Length: 88
Image (tube, rainbow, N blue to C red; front, side):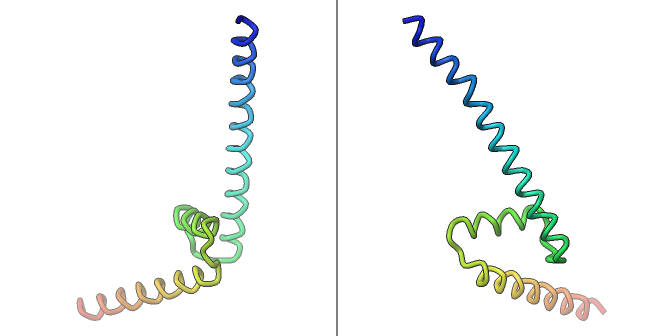
């Protein structure tokens, strides 16, 4: 009976290390993606980049996603321009 408890405890001790390693690797990967995004002048902030990555992981076509992001940017720019013209 004591052996089972010790075994479970040792497994639990190893598990957080594995999880911590995975978290560290995920953060490092994301930081690399964020740096690439900045170097390519995508204009994506960390939150938007996270959403895009998650959508791609769920099977969304990256080219279609890029087209949608570009279209949304054009729409926002048009709305901002229209708003500025109305205020003048």
